[in-house]
Length: 481
Image (cartoon, rainbow, N blue to C red; front, side, top):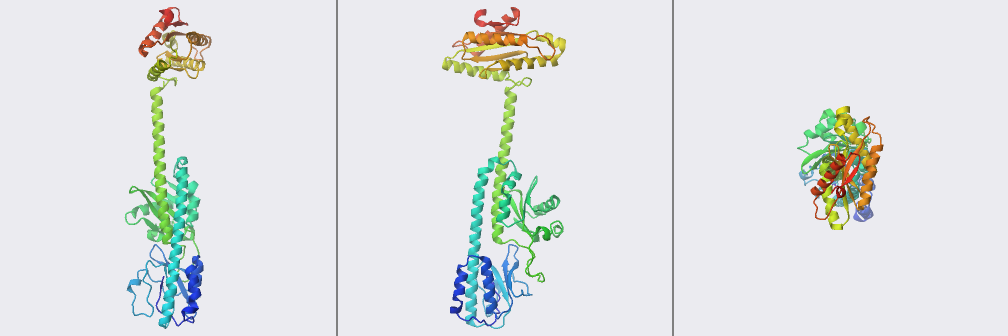
């Protein structure tokens, strides 16, 4: 806190009189109360002359925040004027930095004792205000940490930036006393609260992009004058824009809009016409922008991973599934049969292979066309699926051939399942108009030491024996041998 050096003779002229006031200033916990009392004390010490208190903001300007009587006409000094103060003036300015703000008041003459009292009072008040400022910043940081933990816990449930803003935007507005927040990302705009229309935000994004190399934090006064019409302070107040970067790459801007507030004195140009952003709020907004940038990057990575997993699953399905029927294809059946043989070799459970072929399928294609032939294949695949157990593996072996892998059944049970499947297909009318559909099935049992190719050859040989025996039947490789 600094003070103009020319002050009049005070009524309170000794330390004993001011001691209770100094004690209170050093222990007060409310910033507004400190400003109110400080203004009253200065007003009395300066002979009831006007007193104005200003606070420095990130834009380098001092804005009127409190006054007793009426504010002075002279504009407030810059925070950089302290170093150029004439040391011969009656009251030297405090030397500590950074200054919280500045006090201006009219004065004539001042005694040495009064200079010491005022310097002590302003130093105590300034230290207390800076301390309360640091407490508020730490409080903000703790709130951000708690919200950060909440975002981490919810991150898997968030699909995009809109979900992030929907869940946490109201807390950001409350924390920074804003009326609206907008995320201006590379590919979209996400808003919450009272914000300008999309067109004005697009203009703002272009202006911020042009300023990206010079500053990370921007206010409305930093932007080109042509944006004033698109972002009127009377409606949207002042804005605070923070560039969001992740690994030195800009992903967008966090923009906060502060509600418009009436000035303390509309007739004075030195008075702030809106609620400007304080340095502590700018620091908090920067921390928030960093958290949002990291969260958006994680969401993008998770979204990309989900797309990659989905694509891999799709390719895996295409690699393992027959495109016509949706059942396993030859490659997947080959893998499944090798796995089933390995498991049976380890457990000793019986394993059977059924290889089946649609009878007279070439004649169906020749007579009704390949489209009807495809319908017949789909019809037979559906019947096979409905007649098998959940643990049985099956699929399209190729053309009009199907394969079924059956485990943990007796030979009689395996043949019964094959017979029932053969009879059910023969009794079901094909909706494609191809007439009566039958299949021939060859069954083979795996024996220890037998490879899966050998097992397939046994089942295939039994199936062709069923064809030669009249079709629409089941032939076991054991019986054929």
